[in-house]
Image 1 (cartoon, helix red, strand yellow):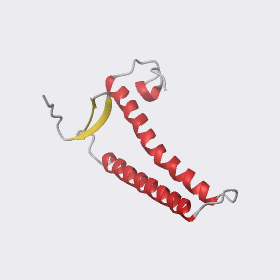
Image 2 (cartoon, helix red, strand yellow):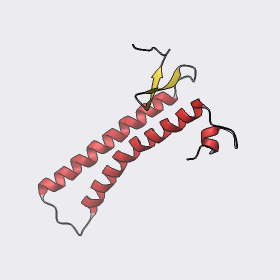
Image 3 (spheres, rainbow, N blue to C red):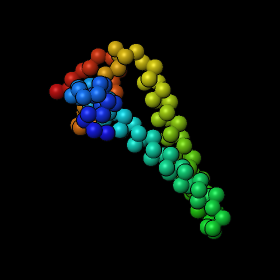
Image 4 (tube, rainbow, N blue to C red):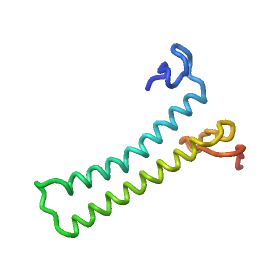
Amino acid sequence: MTAMDPAVTGEPGQAPTEANRMRAALLAAVSHDLRSPLAAATAAVSCLHSHHVELTVEDHDELLAAADESLDRLIYLTASLLDVSRLQPDLARVRTCHGSPRVRTGPLQCRR
Protein backbone atom coordinates (compact mmCIF):
# COMPACT_ATOMS: atom_id res chain seq x y z
CA MET A 1 0.00 0.00 0.00
CA THR A 2 1.56 3.31 -1.02
CA ALA A 3 0.99 6.81 0.33
CA MET A 4 -0.87 7.70 -2.86
CA ASP A 5 -3.15 4.64 -2.68
CA PRO A 6 -6.80 5.80 -2.58
CA ALA A 7 -7.37 3.39 0.32
CA VAL A 8 -4.90 5.44 2.36
CA THR A 9 -5.61 8.95 1.08
CA GLY A 10 -9.34 8.71 0.54
CA GLU A 11 -9.03 10.46 -2.83
CA PRO A 12 -6.63 9.78 -5.71
CA GLY A 13 -3.73 12.23 -5.71
CA GLN A 14 -4.37 13.65 -2.22
CA ALA A 15 -1.82 13.53 0.57
CA PRO A 16 -2.77 10.98 3.22
CA THR A 17 -4.38 12.30 6.37
CA GLU A 18 -3.35 11.08 9.81
CA ALA A 19 -6.72 9.36 10.26
CA ASN A 20 -6.33 7.51 6.97
CA ARG A 21 -2.77 6.47 7.85
CA MET A 22 -4.05 5.15 11.17
CA ARG A 23 -6.87 3.25 9.44
CA ALA A 24 -4.33 1.69 7.07
CA ALA A 25 -2.08 0.72 9.99
CA LEU A 26 -5.03 -0.78 11.85
CA LEU A 27 -6.06 -2.74 8.76
CA ALA A 28 -2.51 -4.07 8.36
CA ALA A 29 -2.41 -5.17 12.01
CA VAL A 30 -5.84 -6.79 11.85
CA SER A 31 -4.95 -8.55 8.59
CA HIS A 32 -1.88 -10.08 10.25
CA ASP A 33 -3.85 -11.09 13.35
CA LEU A 34 -6.45 -12.86 11.19
CA ARG A 35 -3.99 -14.56 8.85
CA SER A 36 -1.80 -16.08 11.58
CA PRO A 37 -4.40 -18.40 13.18
CA LEU A 38 -5.90 -19.16 9.77
CA ALA A 39 -2.51 -20.25 8.43
CA ALA A 40 -1.79 -22.35 11.54
CA ALA A 41 -5.17 -24.11 11.36
CA THR A 42 -4.79 -24.71 7.62
CA ALA A 43 -1.31 -26.18 8.08
CA ALA A 44 -2.46 -28.48 10.90
CA VAL A 45 -5.50 -29.73 8.97
CA SER A 46 -3.44 -30.21 5.78
CA CYS A 47 -0.94 -32.31 7.69
CA LEU A 48 -3.74 -34.36 9.24
CA HIS A 49 -5.32 -34.84 5.82
CA SER A 50 -2.08 -35.87 4.13
CA HIS A 51 -1.74 -39.52 3.21
CA HIS A 52 2.03 -39.13 2.79
CA VAL A 53 2.80 -38.56 6.47
CA GLU A 54 2.65 -41.24 9.16
CA LEU A 55 1.56 -39.64 12.43
CA THR A 56 1.79 -41.00 15.93
CA VAL A 57 -1.27 -40.69 18.13
CA GLU A 58 0.51 -37.91 20.03
CA ASP A 59 1.32 -36.02 16.80
CA HIS A 60 -2.27 -36.43 15.61
CA ASP A 61 -3.64 -35.11 18.91
CA GLU A 62 -1.16 -32.22 18.90
CA LEU A 63 -2.17 -31.19 15.38
CA LEU A 64 -5.87 -31.37 16.29
CA ALA A 65 -5.22 -29.25 19.38
CA ALA A 66 -3.26 -26.70 17.31
CA ALA A 67 -6.07 -26.47 14.75
CA ASP A 68 -8.68 -26.16 17.50
CA GLU A 69 -6.72 -23.44 19.32
CA SER A 70 -6.11 -21.50 16.10
CA LEU A 71 -9.75 -21.68 15.07
CA ASP A 72 -10.86 -20.56 18.55
CA ARG A 73 -8.50 -17.56 18.21
CA LEU A 74 -9.91 -16.79 14.76
CA ILE A 75 -13.49 -16.96 16.09
CA TYR A 76 -12.57 -14.60 18.95
CA LEU A 77 -10.87 -12.11 16.61
CA THR A 78 -13.77 -12.19 14.14
CA ALA A 79 -16.33 -11.64 16.92
CA SER A 80 -14.26 -8.76 18.31
CA LEU A 81 -13.99 -7.13 14.90
CA LEU A 82 -17.72 -7.45 14.35
CA ASP A 83 -18.37 -5.91 17.77
CA VAL A 84 -16.08 -2.98 16.98
CA SER A 85 -17.70 -2.49 13.58
CA ARG A 86 -21.09 -2.09 15.27
CA LEU A 87 -19.89 0.82 17.38
CA GLN A 88 -21.11 4.24 16.39
CA PRO A 89 -18.35 6.04 14.48
CA ASP A 90 -18.25 8.94 16.94
CA LEU A 91 -17.59 6.56 19.84
CA ALA A 92 -14.61 4.73 18.34
CA ARG A 93 -11.25 6.45 18.20
CA VAL A 94 -8.01 5.14 16.78
CA ARG A 95 -4.82 6.27 18.45
CA THR A 96 -1.20 5.19 18.63
CA CYS A 97 0.15 3.52 21.74
CA HIS A 98 3.81 2.59 21.66
CA GLY A 99 3.80 2.55 17.86
CA SER A 100 0.82 0.25 17.29
CA PRO A 101 -2.78 1.24 16.56
CA ARG A 102 -5.38 0.49 19.22
CA VAL A 103 -9.13 0.91 19.08
CA ARG A 104 -10.61 2.58 22.14
CA THR A 105 -14.27 3.22 22.86
CA GLY A 106 -15.59 6.31 24.53
CA PRO A 107 -13.60 9.48 25.11
CA LEU A 108 -9.84 9.24 24.92
CA GLN A 109 -8.04 9.53 28.21
CA CYS A 110 -4.34 10.24 28.43
CA ARG A 111 -2.21 8.65 31.11
CA ARG A 112 0.79 10.43 32.50
